Amino acid sequence: MSIRVALADDHPLILDGLEALFRGAGFEVVARCRDGEQALRAVREQAPDVLVLDLRMPRLGGLEALRAMREEGLATRVVVLTAEAEDEEIVEALRLGVRGIVLKEMASEMLVKCVQRVHEGGSWLERVSAGRALDRLVQGEEARREVASTLTPRESEVVRLVADGLRNKEIAERLGIVEGTVKIHLHRAYEKLGVDSRLALAVHLRDKGLR
Image 1 (spheres, rainbow, N blue to C red):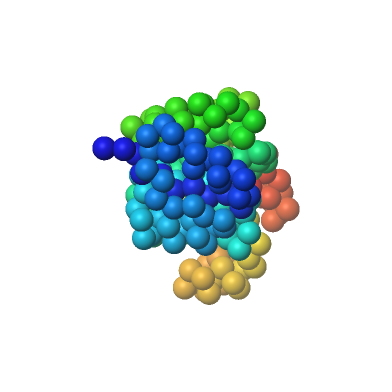
Image 2 (cartoon, helix red, strand yellow):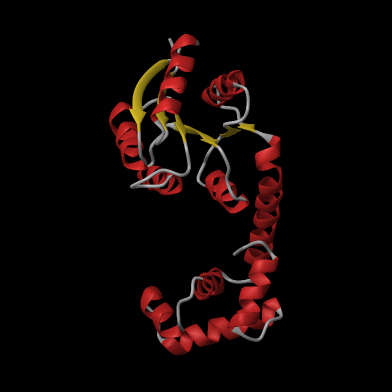
């Protein structure tokens, strides 16, 4: 049985080239998508084995589409095909479950091999584009485990919301607790992490690769 793929890129010429490439390699192309909304709809309706996705598209960006797929529990595996991407974008894509990353400048057969490997349950992360991002992802996960082992679950939750920019009153409303309890959790987290203010906390999390 051929691998069923959906293709998402906002450039018609690239879509034409991708479709010709995959059909020529024996794949079944079930959808061509010009933006993230079309890609998300195609995954919902066609359930392709693999989605080949550009991160930067109109109407709904690739990362937003990935978040929606994760929230909905859609099983389609994703390969990112991009001309360029910031380390932060690649890190976020990996966290959202992307299994393959290929630069558009790479040879076309590399993309075909990547999709085949991802379909089989493996991963393909092009080293030039993903190396630094992978390092940051690993460091970030290690830092998360370190923070999780230091703080209680509630303290971690408060710290995360503080890092997102919420004030104590907003955190209390979000968690369903009184503002005084937020202050207690935050004070204890400060002591455990060796910081003394929101600014110091933000710097600490940034240095750990958590923000």
